[in-house]
Image (tube, rainbow, N blue to C red; front, side, top):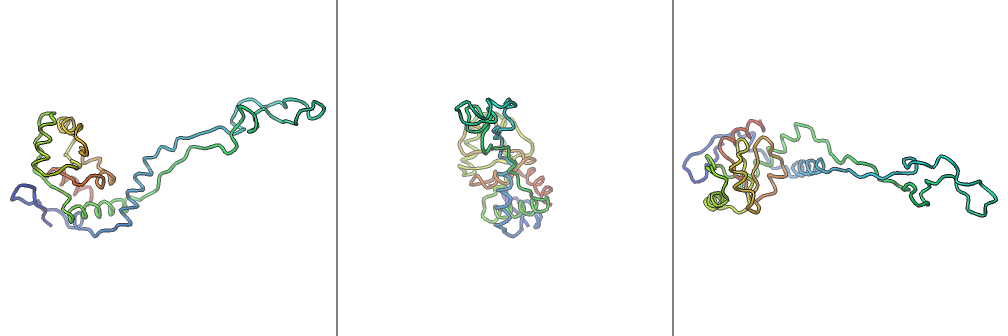
Length: 201
């Protein structure tokens, strides 16, 4: 299939398998939730009565003191004792095999092409880290919310875009499904599009 290059009469030829896949909403949902679940830290921890230090000896004898019987100072009802139902570190990641991931990414990218949310450009042409230059380029493209995918992370492009709201710059090598669906448009350089095609094939 052919994808038109924005503001140009040229077209780039891409694989139908990578950019013409059918829309699979359930798989894309699974893809996004799996990625977001993997990003959760799950770092929470509390000490139960066996984790708290001390408590080896019985505080006082069982009978004759007039006080309630007690076996350990680390009981949950004591101050500085263990927590009754202590929280443990959790792994929130959800397994998604490589074949499902690749098919889901194909479906997602293909839907971006069908809905005309994928804008292919020859090159961004931002050589200086200046926000003014980047804003002019975005106005030329007619986008206000976009993910810009480059072939290798260019520091000038990153610095020029970081102060503009709803604009995200990412290297094509580390693109993820959440970033693809987060912004209204995906602006991709022609060289980065070829690398994306290789990744999805």
